[in-house]
Length: 249
Image (cartoon, rainbow, N blue to C red; front, top):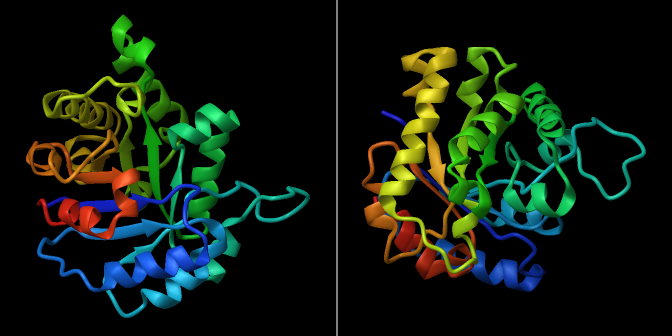
């Protein structure tokens, strides 16, 4: 059975005291599902979070990293730096990184390679914009993003890869994606994997949904056969809401 995962991406939110406060709240809420739980604070608070959560079953992960091991990349963070503070999982390819920081498929392929070379797990994000959805080009866009960044990998690498589908058009646009639309795309993603690597691998990879999952829709979304969890944005900043989503399985 595929691993169920709920990962909270805190994005550029929460200073040190706010991070400590949210972690304290998270530690006091009981988990009733078997889902793996992750949170991704900002870089400056990763070590604090790792230390604070070492006694509970919540993994601290990173929001991004550079593909180089070191060098003249001012402001960037390497895999080795993340590993040195206890981080073993990193989010790569988030829609905001693609849109605001011009991250390309080629760049992301390098980042994936660097993470895997450092024995890190990758949550790899991808998804289509509103224009792609309205034009009917959404499956082609998603397929291209997956193939360009991941299909150079050996099948064995996918034991350390989690996929996260983000319908960019349904996040903060007033548009909404139905659970059925999420399932349709997740099934297409699994078929794309199967065509390249076979059914066994495709059926072993967890695929998360990143389209505005909330406490009031999580159960219906997570009930879909190809949806294995969520990459949570805003709702992850509220401990009660976040664990309502975790416990929706």
